[in-house]
Each structure stands twice: as structure tokens, then as C-alpha cells.
Image 1: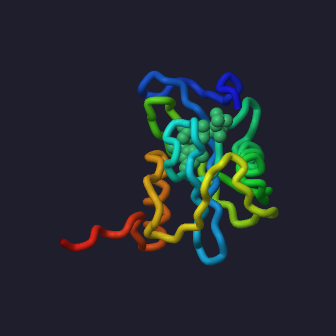
Image 2: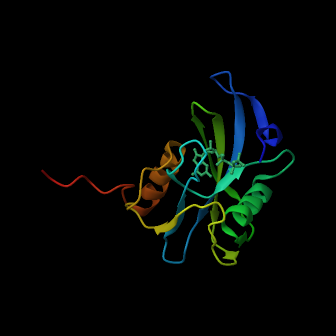
Length: 155
Ligand SMILES: Nc1nc2c([nH]c(=O)n2[C@H]2C[C@H](O)[C@@H](COP(=O)(O)OP(=O)(O)OP(=O)(O)O)O2)c(=O)[nH]1
């Protein structure tokens, strides 16, 4: 979406306006979570992230997430609520990430933006992960008594 339409809120500690982002943690029955690569042309292209995107003006987090997942993946999600809010100050934007666990969806996954997707258990077998997604991965790892990435092999 054009940045001029993105929902923004007043400046954070760094004096920059926050960009509001809805992010979905799609969880399969076996606990695997869906990650995908950022499409070419976006900041951090090729990094792994959870699906989602910026809120448009007037949208709720749930509405934005529902729209983004149809646009990016071709799936329609059921009702969701925000389970966590984090912020990350990137060179390209100060983002506020509204995280929602998603347990139900309909449709077949299609990579409509040329991404690659992977269902991942912890520790992850893909990387690198977007820095703004790392705190939530640590939180999920804590819930599961797992690590985000496997320990380095002993020398
Ligand atoms: N989707 C997603 N975005 C994340 C995650 N972690 C994280 O820091 N972000 C940041 C990266 C971006 O600065 C921002 C999302 O913006 P975006 O450019 O992907 O959103 P969009 O799909 O609306 O993009 P566009 O229409 O402007 O192309 O949130 C994550 O796990 N998933």
C-alpha cells in the first residue's frame, strides 16, 4: 500500500512517527508456526518474518491482518485478538507490531508476492529472521521451553 495511506501514530522516543503493523502467528495443530521470506524490493528482502503488514487508515488490527493474509497468502483468517505489542526502531521506520495468534483459517496457501514459506518448529531451521520478529520468537520459545535457534555445534 502507498505509505501515505499507512496508519501512523505520534512520535516515539526517537522523535519518529510510529507505523502500525498487524502480524499473524499462524499456528498449526502440531504447534508449527508459519514464516515467510520478505519479498524482493522491500527493506530486509529475503529475511524471514511472520505474515502481516501495515494498517491502513481507519483499520483495526484484525481487519488489517485479515486483508494482508488474503493479499499475501490467499487465506482467510477467523477472529483474532492481539496477544502482544512490541516496537522496533529500524533505519527505514519505527514500527509498532501488534501480534495475533491465528488458530483457524480457510483457503489454500499461495505465495502471491513471490515469497517462500515454511512451517517451523523451534529451534528454527531458517534464517535470518527480521530483527523486529525476534522478541516474539523468544517469547514463544519461552512458552515452549525451547530455544529460538539451536545451540552452536561444540568445537
Ligand atoms: N509482516 C511483518 N512485518 C514485520 C515483522 N517484524 C517486523 O519488524 N516487521 C516490520 C517490517 C516492516 O518495517 C513492517 C511491515 O511493513 P511491510 O512493508 O512488510 O508491510 P506492507 O505489506 O503493508 O508493505 P507495503 O504495502 O508498504 O509494501 O513491520 C514480521 O514478523 N512480520
